[in-house]
Image (cartoon, rainbow, N blue to C red; front, side, top):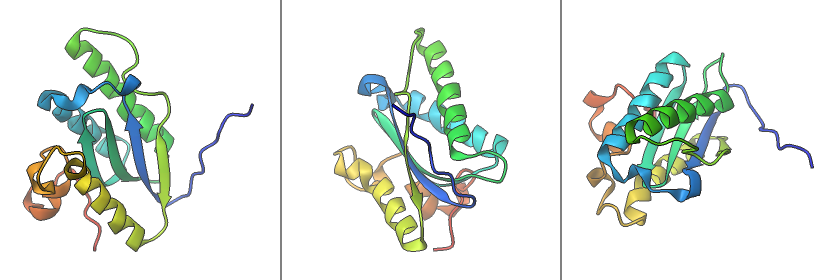
Length: 159
């Protein structure tokens, strides 16, 4: 059986999803959610990618990432997941895999699809019953779109 290869397109944005190992609900803790967001922010600058949207759900996260010229989506996800996993394990005094080994990605081909995926991400907590509206959920990029003064993490596309 051959190993699946990821199709990488220069200048493309990717809708990515990664799930925790055995769907463990590690993101029920606000402290853990904040650690994950800080990890994304650190690597955003270190690996020079754009982050258009994200949501941290109890056992997974979604994001839209546009890699820069030097690092592809696989490197970016490997760094985010690996660094967060190490920090999380230290924080809770455990060892082992935090994430399922792979992640799902889908190339975004046009502006309409980008807007659709951003809306999907922002409404995910509402669909899951975690919030009444996207604005009520703290661990998503929704409020960065509403209050652009807190925009240190999100690269809002001209929509």
